[in-house]
Image 1: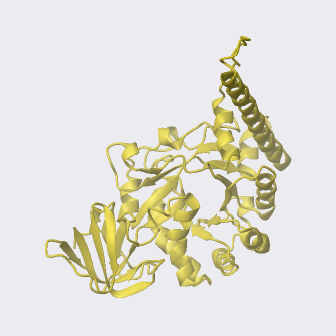
Image 2: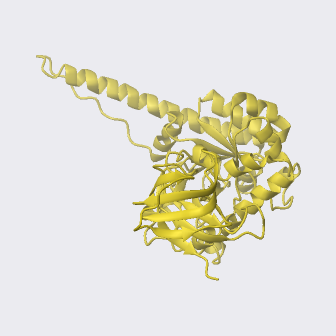
Image 3: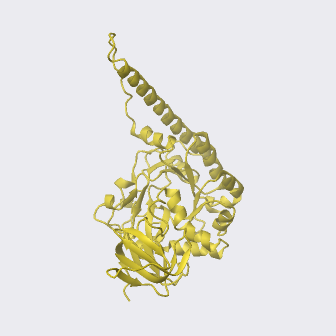
Length: 402
């Protein structure tokens, strides 16, 4: 058993205890509060003068799928040969030896959702992993698949327009995506008819009249994967910077009744009334980036605060691989620009956990949840603060040496 004592314990969902105690056993949190009896055999970590909180979470990262250090020739984030690639799985490309994972651990980020980039209209399936490096990627997986990456706006039209293929316009983006979803819906209907015919055949199998068993449709991995999105078994995570692209994403997702989030949402503040009224969650960021392309012209550092104050569920994301270690600094910038501190804390913990769909395991310090715990030297949003102890599943993933 591990006991973290005497620190300022920010549970995120159950209030703050100062000083507080967190007890950990078997990889889970077994107690958290002020007046917790610490067993004599517990390994005690004194967090006096420090902040204890859940490991931070980035709901939109490309760590390892765009690997650190080795360059484009080993980057696996965009299969730029077909605008519709829903059958691709980040699980098959994420390398647990990527040095970015250790960087994230040392920054207090213990969970990330990582996956394909935005070169395709449908890029493939994301995977949510713990950041503590393990020998095999399956030992790091928290949820797989963890959403289907889709993208509107500049990137797909630039990629395929340069190849003289469709899409080369925003109209083309919407049309190709709609066509793929219609194909997937037709595919599901074929299988539904087959299953109904098979059930009828089996029910009448004992009759005197002999009938031929129905033949199943040919499997199509693309349409099968998109079918899971149509059945709301997998969220659509739609990359969109500009307000008009976000509105197009909303129209398409509502047309097909998808469970979806908006990724980046750079101009979300322009349609905050729509996002709030419809209850659409967003992952906002990255903050530390210049206007490197036209659709980033509307960047506004006040965006996350405007959205949060309107009641939109906001997760703050860094996007780049090992730069995700600066997730807390991105959140601190949002606070400086008007985001309430409590909302910013939620935006790097419980909100991304809920958006990913892993809030039953991570995102807050609660009894029964995974013991992903960080002890910071000070407030996490102070750029001088460092992580001094990081636990993932109750294991010491990082301990800072003096």
